[in-house]
Image 1: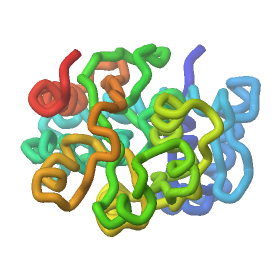
Image 2: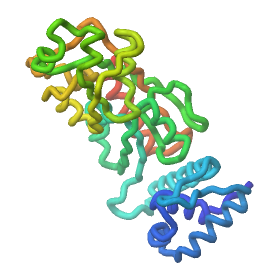
Image 3: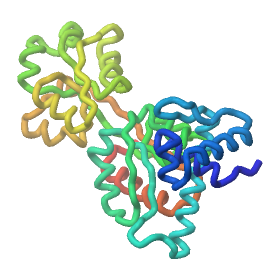
Length: 294
C-alpha cells in the first residue's frame, strides 16, 4: 500500500501541534485542507488515526503511521543535507527520550560535542521510555528494556547504581534506632513522579512487601537531589550524582551494603540517519566511561 507523503505530513503536524488549526498554520494550509488530508489517510488506512480530543491524540494505528511520517521526514532532511540544499545554520533534528537522572548526569556532557545536530529531549522514566519509540514521538530512547521495539535496535549501555540516601539531620530524626522496617514505614520518601518505582522496589527488596511510607513527589532530577539533601525525605540517588555529596558529608548512606542496579539500553529506529548515528556513537562512548559495565 502506498501512502501519500502530504497526508502523512498532515498527520504528523496535527499530532505535533495538538490540533488541526495549529497544524494548518504550521503547514501554511487551511484547517479544512489539513482535515481533508488526514481524512483521506484514514480512508486509505481503513481506520481512525486521530482522536479528536483536546489536544488531539494518535490512535494505535495512527501511531504506526505517525512513526512512518517522522521516519520519512528524517530521511528527507538527511537527503537535503547531503545534497547541500539545507538552509544555512539549520542542523538535522533528532528527537530523544531520556530518563531524568541520565540527562542530569552523563547524557548532556556526552552530546555537548555535537553542534551539528539539533536535539529535542523528552523526559520519561526508563521503564516507560520505549513507548515513545512505538508511537513515533522519538527516534531514540534510553530505556531499561532490553527487548527491541518493533523496527528498532537495542544496545546495552551499562548500569546506573542507586543507593538510599538522606541528610544526617533526617536520619537523626527518623532513624534514631537505625533504618528498620517500622521506621521506614513512617519516614517521608521522595519520589520523582507516579511512574517512579525505584524507592518502592528497594523497600520491598530490603524489608518485604507492605512498607508504605508517606511520600513527596519532586519531578526534576536536580530538585529531587536537593529535596533529599535538605531533609525533606529519603530517596534513591545514582552514584554519579551523589558520590561527591557523600564524601563531603552532605548526604548519608542509609544502608551502605544495599544497592539497586538499573540496566540501561539504547534503542533507536532501524533506519540509516547519520545524525541519529552520531548521537548513538556519542552516547555509547559516554556510557562506556560513566556507567558501570556488567
